Length: 497
Image (cartoon, rainbow, N blue to C red; front, side, top):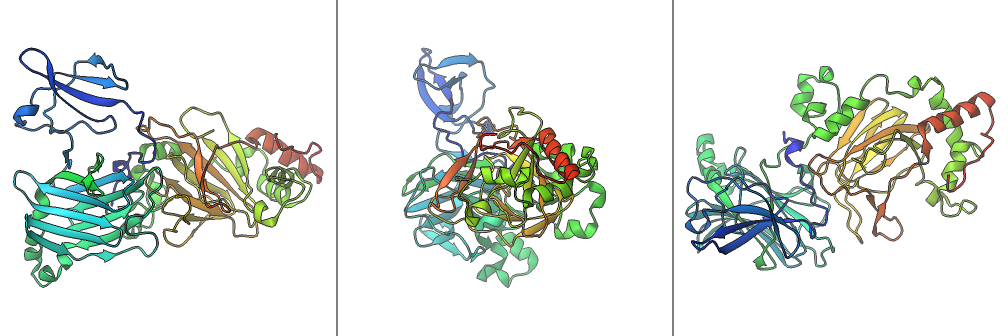
């Protein structure tokens, strides 16, 4: 099963203003003759026993975001390959991704160390996807693939979004499987798959012989990418291939059975990204419940308040509409309450702990979470969750499988590349209350402070800054007063409150 912590890089932020890590070399007179650079988000390059003659003595590193760079430290000396050469962390294994605005073609070439051949090639054009094995300049074998996703656009887009699209290639030498996908790096977002054991000329062989036929993957090392026939942008390299996605449902360690491990129907917090682990530990306890608020009927009071005209909850939902005096059912169904718990700690989009109240029939728009990690616990009722592939203006996101119904005390999660885009909907006859918990991963130095969503009318991608309708303490006060007095809270909410 793929470890979510191995797919941590944010693909979605603008890196145009990021500092650049530069390497200089000096000649015998102390003057720099060679300069090449790599984006600052790239991992330090691997060491080689023997470096190429022209690239064997970087003298110092410097961080430069302007024309005049300044030296900040003496570095660890790495033996580097020239700019444009990327390397798999593990030979024959890993995931390669590029963010591209190409409209004609995107190509991945993964070469064998030293001889270059055999070479793996993946080319995506406007009309087709082709995997091939190249054994020489004029020797090419097309690898048969199967398409594993019914929704979405398999090929390049005639008009690429302004921020570009992510294309990725997974190489799995252990299972002799190649995968191609777009958007987030996840098995659910795989478009095409090559199983080397199923190739026509291999399938009839004995098991040991089939393994031998896939050994050429084991030496794949050097990576080249091309976009619209020109050298491509620097790829991002992940050390492991895409294999099996972690399940969305998180359970305590002592509740996992052997059968569930075998079928991968649930996971434990130990497998989650570090930020999700921390959030889970904070909210998974038995005390995190509406009943523990000091008001045992809180869930019933919330349901009464948000479903009864004139009560505080229902009135607050109306103030969230564009014109509270002229509300349509279409607009009202997308309104829910956000009750914040605690303060903004500066490490999440908005306040990290938010109790959300979903009246019957209400739902969210399709949205992402600003690349943050999250854990969601159902405190009462049931909520339906549907995951999607990506947010692209002008197109409808494609669902990734059927919706999942989450019930009281169940916990789900999301990471930067896993379950990042979703929509929630209360399809039941009773109000649902959920606890949303957010935190940016440790390696995220951008901190997108906004969620993004697809506007249901304009079909455009829009930003949304997470806000607060009231604090948890205030909300409990309103609910308890209404429940005990059996009438609306005397001070009605306003649009700005």
